[in-house]
Length: 142
Image (cartoon, rainbow, N blue to C red; front, side):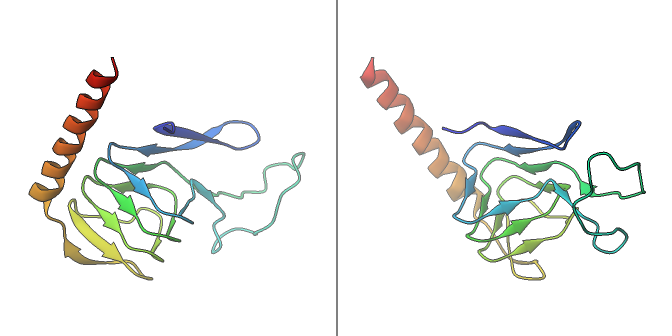
């Protein structure tokens, strides 16, 4: 079991969080970034901790994975993303900051795009069966 929410810290403050819903799956090699350099507008380097503000504004924000979501192997999710209920992201995909998803859809690629829809009724039925199975095992263990 892992925490459902993880805070990301920089040197001085909490910057963002990653949140995971029920039946959320992250495959091997997935990278979720809550803070990233702005490669277009800023210098890209490690700044010394004692430097005055030089105007560097990283891209930062929460990444939220709602219930019944999944991310395939070696995908990258950038900051400020909400992956809505039932959405899955295929392997080797790149999700740019603030990408707009539709619930219960399948996305893949670089650039990422919608490639299909998910069967909500089948997935939620399977989740209900799994919940019941786990509840039965807990009762049997008592």
